[in-house]
Length: 285
Image (cartoon, rainbow, N blue to C red; front, side, top):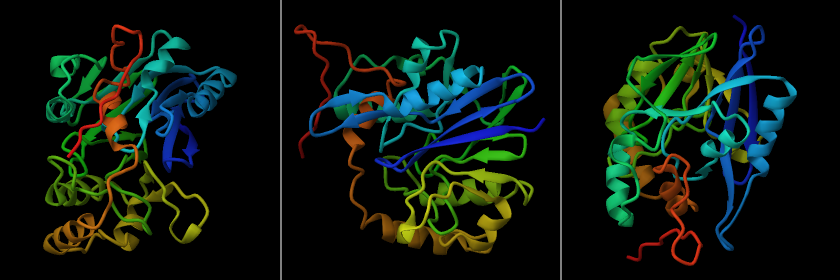
């Protein structure tokens, strides 16, 4: 099979969304779609998602799943909105999302999140192969950025979410609740870097350091040889020390609070209150 992989870049959140499909059967999946949100006004819009929907429709694809690599802290997921266009599509995520849900249900003091990840249609196990028509998607748990991060291996392509970025950007941060630099080191070196060197790596974000042009694809070999934070020869202690010091200097993502409240609900919005309006909470410290 020769996969077709189409990327979509959201410059507001530096997020990469992917449509992956088999050109012979038109079976497809969507990875990490964005729901546009203006924090100042609370206005939500669907421009980013509509580009993906239009691409699927124009190419006559049959999308089976929206795959989430984790509960994102920097953008809201539009996963549930795809059901308005493709009624049979399902939303899948690694089963450790339940750990994240438990943490943030308590932080936001919300009780409508379904216990055990039932807001999602499919919870994935480590090593599980998900069948989406002719596509076979292997789930690799790659925790560290969050305890629930997964990467998805399809043929010779792995989609790493926030675990691993382009070589000139490094890796995801590890200072969110239950994040772990040690876990991320093990995830990258033992799972991603153990893949064949020609395996293509598709990243979840590109922050375009030094204002360079967009890049979203590398290889396992390039990452092992060139990643500025975690090469194949980097000692665990050195990476942990670097990651912890760097993370201590980072500000919270701008959309952290609204994103998590939607994303732990699998892309569902909070239920409307008695006046018919939905609200997101902002805990004060």
